[in-house]
Image (cartoon, rainbow, N blue to C red; front, side, top):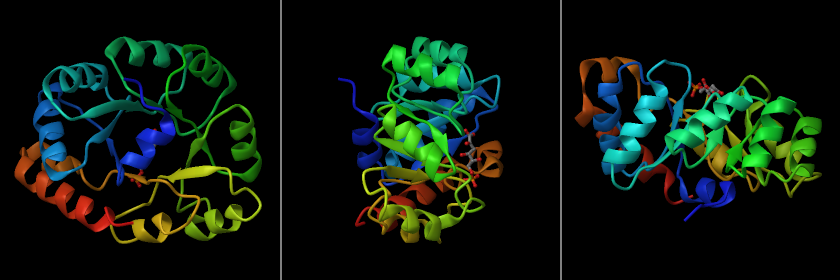
Length: 211
Ligand SMILES: O=C(O)C(=O)C[C@H](O)[C@H](O)COP(=O)(O)O
């Protein structure tokens, strides 16, 4: 079954933004996150290992909904669909990328940082958009200001979001979920501290699930 972007976003307390450098980290990392209650995972295409990591998680981790982040080109869309991604995310919304995403019917979170960008994406049919870089582009006050004139546009703020400030965003009527890298820190992955990552995921899921 293919879930829409809005369904995917609504079902996730948060979406971890993950950079996997070593494909051998993919399965233990995803297993730890899913065990802790974080099941919708964004593996960014910022490393050479990303597509292999996505394939391994898809094949080996029950309960994970695996998507890709940092999509920049139409080719990225094709690569991600071939690897079996359930959704894609981008920091922006260049025209060629958006055209390919719409053509392919891929559930997608395009990035925006201004009212006009958000309105253009909503006009193109995107039900929920990524607000990036959230803290640098105005944070929760910016999204609160947008909610009155543009209540139909839903956001996933990402960039500078942490367990400390996630609720401030999630309490807004136009925020469906948040993205952030805090549950999969590089240092813990390098050490193979999967139990620590599971604990972080559990703390996060428990803190954000009653929103
Ligand atoms: O890779 C992408 O596609 C991005 O858009 C960037 C990420 O969303 C941020 O790097 C996450 O930011 P932090 O949670 O502050 O670490």
